[in-house]
Amino acid sequence: MTAQTLTNDKNSLSWLALIGARLDGWTVSVLVVACIAAVPIITVIGLAIAPTEDIWRHLLDTVLSRYIRTTLVLMIGVGFGTFVIGTGTAWIVTMCNFPAKRIFQWALLLPMAVPAYVIAYVYTDLLEYSGPLQNSLRDAFAWQTKGEYWFPEIRSIGGAATMMTMVLYPYVYLLARSAFLEQSVCVLEASRTLGHGPWRGFFKVALPMARPAIAVGVSLVMMETLNDFGTVDFFAVATFTAGIFDVWLNMNSPSGAAQLASILLLFVGVLVTLERVGRRGRKFHNTSTRLRKLPGYQLNGLVKWVAFTAMSIPVITGFVVPAWVLGRYAVDYYANTLETSFWENVGNSLMLSALAGVIAVSIGIVLAYGLRLGQNRGIRFLTRFAALGYAVPGAVLGIGIIVALGWIDNAIDGVMKNNFGIATGLILSGTIAAVTFGYVTRFLSLSFGTLDAGLAKITTNMDGAARTLGLSRFSTLKRVHVPLMRGSILTAGLLVFVDCMKELPMTMILRPFNFETLATFVHQYASDEMLPEASLAALSIVGAGIIPVILLSRTMIMKNKPTSGDGK
Image (cartoon, rainbow, N blue to C red; front, side, top):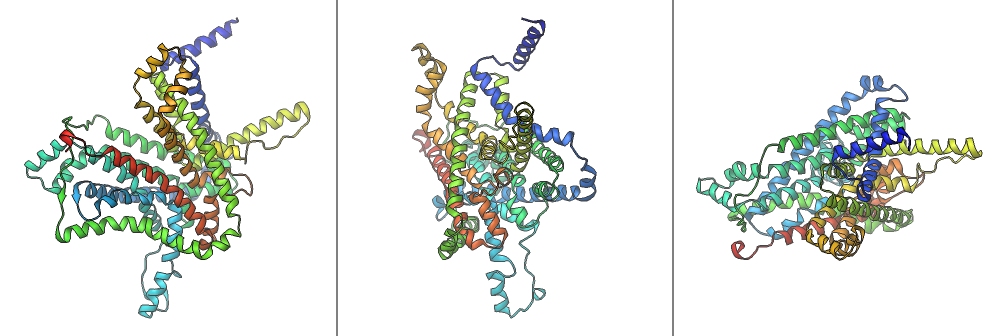
């Protein structure tokens, strides 16, 4: 063994010791997954730092300030709107008694099933100048031109913020409601004895206690806002995501797109950092282990109907209206839709989503079990890093993946030409494998988070008992843990499947030539003002999105059932 080999081995062992990891099969597996997941991000950063062409000056002089301003305004608008609607509805549904309360507990999650770009297409069709609403107003008041009246412009940054708020507030509602349900009755009752009514109790006690959960929800909303492409492209709102596509496709500049993507990564980093710093040093916990059903406020008279109306508006505007419009169009135009490549697009979406779901679940099991076996900071860091993709916008990951795969294809082509005289061309770029890799990288955190939570419910005594019976780690996972985790595995697979069905920006970048999914099909037809022909496809995406809503509703119901004893 050479001195250089010994030096390399010592360096490897020192690095593993530094992060507190032990070199075994599971550690290596987690390390490999983390490295592969990091490829797109590292590629974007590397291309931005050392670009093949200098486009920074042009971006600074023309569009960069506009992208920053528009993106910030959109994030703040959507963040504030979802905070108000999500937190307000969660508090009212949790703490107040009014008609149809039980229905609203799960119905308020329904808008989550509608992608932002779909609801944008629907409301543009309803509210634009030639739409039915403005036509009715002109007929009713005998207006002849647009100059005779004022109507809000749907294709604007305000319209984009409104559309996203209507479908993203359930992120905040879900986490805020869970936080309100878990709050200690003792603290709330103490606030009442101090003379705090419903409003003061909310602002002085409940809201501060739920702040960490609400902050996480708003952070998720802002990340989804950064990821959106369909809405901002349809409304011609110049955000970073739209700019990445513009620089990539219209200016034919991968370096410029990577530079914009790197700035978008800074936005994501700031969001994650602010959320964690905001929780640092703050303790939010129950003061008693006797958790009982929360005392509710009985609403009477006009107030209860005001609450009923307030809860109805988000559900009607965010789900009922889009579903009704798409359903009506689907019935009227289904024959036209079936004459297109609808079924082929359905097959493409199902194939990609199912393949990505299976792979993401398999990798998620490896990460979750590796974390269970190696509870040290090194493994924790690697698993969190591998699951970072969900925080990164799809356009950024798409740019990183396509550039990295292009480098690999060129390297393979060069080797084959030099040694065998064979031109291989593009092997990985623009293939189904590239799209699947992108899906798995972006949605791995959904799979890992669900499986890690499911695995945590299995006592570690099961591991010890299995080892005493002579089972290896892999056999323990296969014969003990996997059967007990079937529900979590199914949930993780469904969540990844549904998000892949809705994914638009990454699909547009990575898909093969002349290859369409339901998401790209809907975007293409709606952009060409042909929403009726795309309604059946859009309704299919919405239908698939209802699956996680049902799962979330059932989870909340089961988790928060009144218990016996003190819970009566």
